[in-house]
Amino acid sequence: MRLVLVGPPGAGKGTQAEFVATQLSVPKISTGDIFRANVTGGTELGIEAKRYMDAGDLVPDEVTINMVRDRLGEADAADGFLLDGFPRTVPQAQALDKLLADMGTGLDLVLELVVDDDEVIRRLSGRRTCRGCGKIWHVEFDQPQVEDVCDRCGSELYQRDDDKPDTVANRLRVYARDTAPLIGFYGKAGKLVGLDATGPVEDVTARAMAILSSYEA
Ligand code: AMP
Figure 1 (cartoon, rainbow, N blue to C red):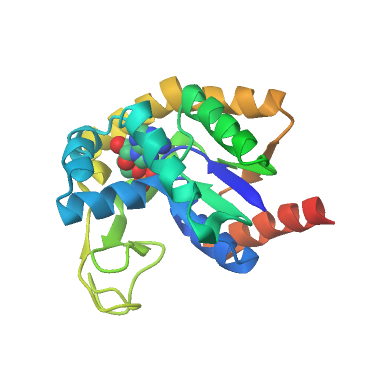
Figure 2: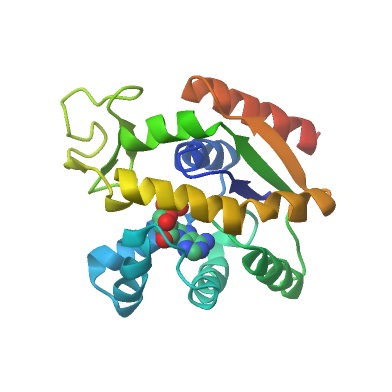
């Protein structure tokens, strides 16, 4: 299956993407994770991306699209993938359609994680990310056994700069302006399915899997 997850920052895309990709046995491709790995590695791409990420702005389309083109060309993505955080603009969505058409394929479904603004702010401000494996925790909803230490790999947890209050406000503005138009874009294409992303993580995953299995059937 070739899937895209869209939704505002804090809707739980990263968390759901992990579960759903595992259940479907497809790679989860997160542009945010790839950018963060490049920032950590101090690559040229990372240095460029960091300027935008720290402000809560989008990395320019051209840079992002080239990066995704390379990633989708890797062997593990040949039979399916789950994209998390890409596309984030209509030009990125158009580029993705073209890229997949050139590969002789196309998207199956776009899942829109639906959650209101107040909930998004609560989720983002409590979110903590593992420096080692990237797993996402939450100070209120999903605490590790030892504060600020990842249960999965033992590394330290931190608050991403872009989860700090001023940047969160900007990310929500950027979402409304640049990313929300994707809802109409994919709706018109007949690919969009809404997913209620409120409530416990496992419930959201179960709802996602129910949608996907009815699609496959
Ligand atoms: P995320 O982890 O998906 O919230 O992404 C973190 C940051 O990486 C975003 O706020 C952007 O600065 C950048 N980023 C991730 N994906 C994209 C994308 N598709 N287009 C532009 N910038 C992106």
